[in-house]
Length: 452
Image 1: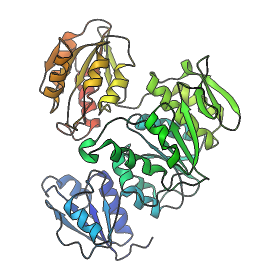
Image 2: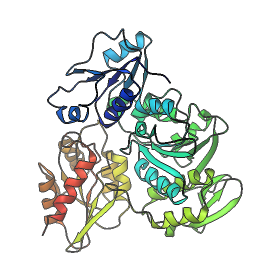
Image 3: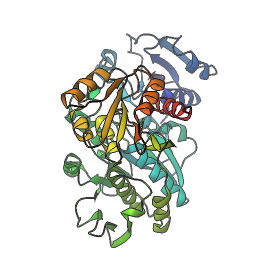
């Protein structure tokens, strides 16, 4: 792909945007950088780009004249229905994302793509560690925080790119073709962007659209909407299930053993041997097992990682125990279904810290399930009043509103008794109060560790 002297419009100066600009500069493209934020808000990022000579910046507004553009590369956070994006489409200017650009520029590495509403980060990290343990040239990239574009110059046909993919990233793929692709589950999320569940599922299903019979599609049999994608897949389909015994796939037998039955039957290990707790993590592990198996990972190395893998930061991450009260950071719980999976991982009484950016989610199911073991709600952010109203309708008695994380941690600790779990699992994105869920999680941990 020759981009020399091509006019490339880069929309969105997030982390992937910075990496993309640096590579485009090396490829001698003419770069037009656009972001709706103004120069003052972007000053730290612009400092990173001070050595880029061949770029012009349109900041604080979107461009009106796009006639001279050869290709547009759009960051995942930029909606594809903005007026100037639609104008690009009308002018037949191709619009792609960073993942697609990296795929076109790369030297044919083996892509393993992972998507779904919940569990992506845990599964991506787990698969990455399994492949590393098998001495494969492994890169853990994508929505997990490491831009795919950063690997273009260092990977080759023997490299494995374990790639977490969001619906936003998958919206803008054209040729991207993973050797192995998995959808873990579906639940309502990002409906403020996708508008309908059908659109959301269609964006996720793009992960399979370029596969052929030489590739593998790993599907969650227990999720009916994921299972229904079977007819859309051209790759070899492998299901995983924790509820059903499958004729072919990865499943749980009557003795709670995880069985691989793809080309032959292998009893791998008992689910009690897995290091990660919870039914949702059992599913994540099964998906990882299927992906590892079709990539010929040594089974003993696979088992070792499954037995020893530690939870990802901000995903049911144990922080500390103080006065026999357990603190858990699940800041990655950015939608109600994710938080349901978190609260059902514990039998102890839970004080739940929740609330954040409003993605127009429905909290009814979460608060219905939470009746089992949520003893108190500590709420903050844009959605605090929405969650409080729903909780009162379900007869929750102890609901506290706070202004920040320090107040949330202190209020939770005051309410807690020996054996309780104080769980940060917001069921919402972080963007109303924090730059990212990682920053939110670190704020929680800092405040927890400051408690006396």
